[in-house]
Image (tube, rainbow, N blue to C red; front, side, top):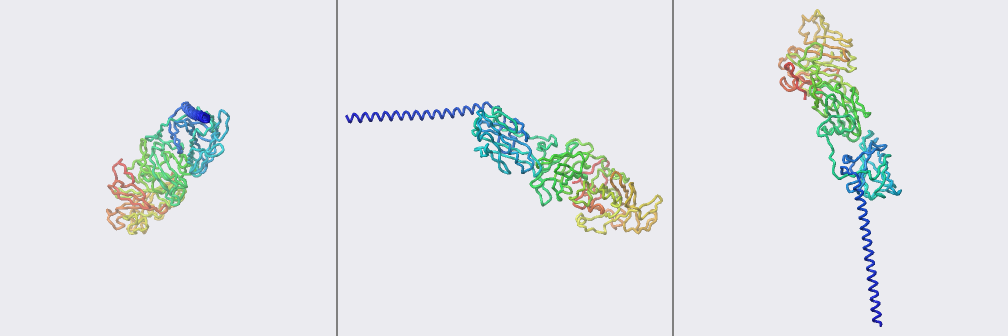
Length: 592
């Protein structure tokens, strides 16, 4: 009985155990099937949702650049330029971006804009709103309660420069699993869009559409048209802020001369230069220049009709052709009284006459001055790079041909115009066969210097040794040139003593068209005789006009060299070489 009873109890326990095991197995299988079903349903839902979105080209990276958003539709929003939304190729990420203008480089108030999410079941939780918390160098995605969103990323770029407004860009990537439901209505900047209206990028990269060739410049503050123009790295000559400038470029296109400048860190181009005054110059291959001054207003002082845009750290400027200096072939752009930042700038369009009205063909001494206009000149002035004047003091040139030295000086500076002749008749020095280094240092060989004095001769040849030479009324005057050490004993030009020789003539025009102007000539064989040298030994000639500036007018080259007869100014010293007259119609090569 006991044995049978034990056997029976054992069988009962085994049966119960089997039934329990079977029930557990079935329960586990049921749970697994339910889990698989939920996963499958979620995957099917995500896949179904993914297939429902409108597909557009794009593969988005959260890097602060919106170039990879090009295929996604723009949506309007108050307080911004526009915003965009897109799902990732697998539907698992929601991308959001918006852009606008920041008032300063420290302005991150735009990040307070919040994306609002409303769900069909009316749920309100941490996924009902997202925003970005950002400062310089850091950005985080925040939920409706300002907590961090796990797995989300953000990038914020503020291109304002100091207090100058500039564009900002905000990008976000948020896992779809963060949201209460994949169905929602998104509101941003007052604009609503349903989840089904949001596009889905297909993962194909969008190549940025860079201009392959130059297609013109528009002054619009967008700068995309400058991508085809080569930029030159630039820095400021002021040691206190060498990094206030980083790049420069220039294009001469038809009737406009375009300039691009990119600020560096810590300052901007309106404060660039040795005297921090934002003064720049467009200089021609003839030595003429147009001076401009930048202000952050933004405005361009010194010229009429200029256009300018200044957004963030970038400037673009257009100067009308009629405001450019006279040039033969090319222009350069750089700091006022400084080295060029960009050189050899030629007009991209056919340029009939190249702004020249009178192709240089030698000098006629007649007081008309037109034949000087298209010949190389140098700047003469006392002003420094810190000058606030909108024009230079004066321009001057020397030209030597057929045994004569010709000189030309013109000024429009009001301070000089008040002298009405004195600026051209005092403190003039003509130096011969002296090096530029010596002249620059003030070491002048007095044995090879001619100091002119200006006298008048009437119709009968009578000499007035002390004529009026300053404070002259408007008009044109002719003087004969003698040496400053002349004795002044001769009464008539027909009977000159040895020390009273006439070495040349000067014509001076006062006050016409808002300028004073002279041209003169010296007979070089007579100068050589006075200096006690053979006329063929006079190889280098320099001129200084002390009441206007300390620069020496300089011309480089030889009588057969490539730069013969072209006036330029190197440092503060200039030399002119004897120059054989070119054939009629032949241009003088540009200065280098």
